[in-house]
Each structure stands twice: as C-alpha cells, then as structure tokens.
Length: 49
Image 1: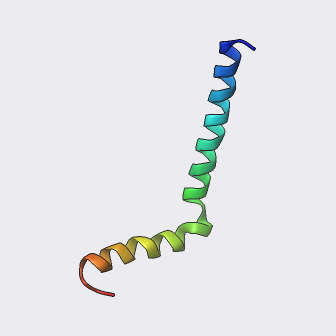
Image 2: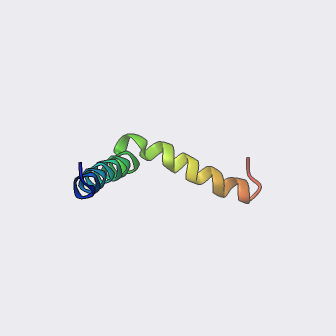
C-alpha cells in the first residue's frame, strides 16, 4: 500500500464519521434531549434549579 491509497482511505473514513456525527446531532430523536440540556445550563446560571 502506498501513501496515496492510505490517505484516500483515511479521508473517506473521516467523511463517514463526520456525516454520522451530523446525523446524530441533528436527528429529531435527540432534539428534546438537547433542548433540555441547553435550558438546564441557562437555568443554572440564573440560580434556578
């Protein structure tokens, strides 16, 4: 295997991982969970528990 082939494989794997993270972050299943986490940070800064 030469460097060009390994570099190409690494690029494709990186792209697949990146697209997987995007899918996970923007999936509708996680929306409520992320909204709750985001609001809890703001509530804790304001002194609300």
